Amino acid sequence: MSGSERSLAKGSAAPCPVPQGLIRLYSMRFCPFAQRARLVLIAKGINHEVVNINLKNKPDWYLEKNPLGLVPTIETSDGKIIYESPIVCEYLDEVFPGTKLIPSDPYAKAEQKMLMEAFSTVCTMRICVIWVKNNEDTTELKSQFLEKLKKLEEALAKKNTPYFGGESVSFIDYMVWPWFERFSLFVFEGVLDKTPNIKAWHDRMLQDPAVKATFTAPELVLGFFKLYAEDSVDAVDYGLN
Ligand SMILES: N[C@@H](CCC(=O)N[C@@H](CS)C(=O)NCC(=O)O)C(=O)O
Image (cartoon, rainbow, N blue to C red; front, side, top):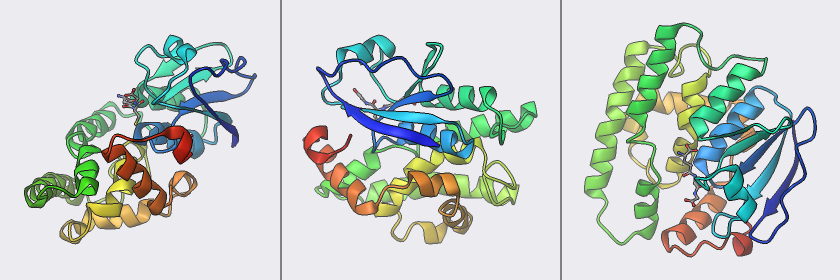
């Protein structure tokens, strides 16, 4: 359902208005927040195009669309602009038909939001960057990470469902997946064995069609993180966009 994909940096002309019937996603290939939006767009079968933004060299017009200068942002054919990944994803889920990812039951919805809060200390790129830099002892970091993960393991075990929201993939699973995709590169060694419910969830998620469609090869992600850790990401040279 994704049409074209192109990359724009400083100096690039602003793209034309969004064609009727299409959603435009401003993104960056390695951004976990943008992957959230890509997961939802694909899971719901929403017709869209992707414009990758060079985040080291943002076009001026992008800051007019999203004053925070972050990706993801979506733009509709009638000129609506929405940014901040959970807001983008919730908007897409509300407006478009197809599988509803957010439960309609207020308590189930609140549970997903609480889980998102609980995940917020786990879903961070800092741990990946420290890992990749490989210049400090990560024992303490790893045990802190495991302690946080164990709380989520308990929550999943208590729920006794295959996914964090229940019997099928839902909003919360897509909101946290991008970090888990990245963690599997380095952080998970010897960790997921201690959280069997999360491991089973992780393996199930790998089979999800939207996850498969947005999955980035580990060696590419690793290359990106190495540059990111050195603060020398050049989106153009590395072909990030
Ligand atoms: N709270 C934002 C965070 C988005 C974010 O941090 N995106 C990063 C890329 S992964 C970004 O756009 N960075 C550009 C910058 O910091 O200038 C969301 O949920 O959408």
